[in-house]
Image (cartoon, rainbow, N blue to C red):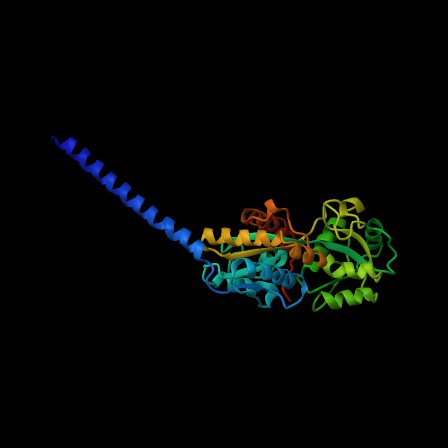
Length: 339
């Protein structure tokens, strides 16, 4: 055998060994990966919420946790970790072991706008893996009953006729109400004062008492006051009307087309969590969102689940990226900083 033929034979043997080694590795990983998904979970799961007990985010977490507990056969605990607009809670999940036992529940504020307001020690996109888009909470534009405007066009006209005299209540700098107000000013060319409160509840109390002029806040908080005829409503900030209040027009119908805002909720896990576990978590969450009891509880707090095909990790990831692209420039241009 000549030298060239010998070299070809040796090269062929090396390739065969490499293929055999690769096949062995693949075969070895397959059952391990499948076994991991089949055995998970073997202990309690913690859903970390960056809010105090009560309120939409906490309620959504507990409703979902109750159903997940039954499906998974393990306790699902909701832990409230407050501070820095929910960023402390998200950071805790980011730093946790990526094994599916620590889950972040968050929303538009914690997983989008906080990135433009705070200097975060983590990346909202690259340090977390999306699990499921679970709920949408749509704000309403509402005012005190005595404000001299009967519809949204009249409200905007009144604000323009009284520059820097009107007041909008918020739950503090960088809160959803504040950012919505900044967006409203930009889209309508109006100017008014923001009045920060230590939460939505006291702001809504003052609105009902006529101490402030208007607010842009979730229907969960504002619709009960509308139904009690304590405040006036102008529009819902969505493309479609609320199922819970079909008589309220959308902003497009009321004269401010494109002013869309949703305080949506989702679930995330730390980057590096096995895909099989994420897939199993997603399926359990999808099953929960289809549960009649969960749907009823969501209806009671005026939350709407996205369509089933939108409840995927991919859909949540796309939503989060699109919202960052939309809101970060608005927030940074307004110079919004935490108090």
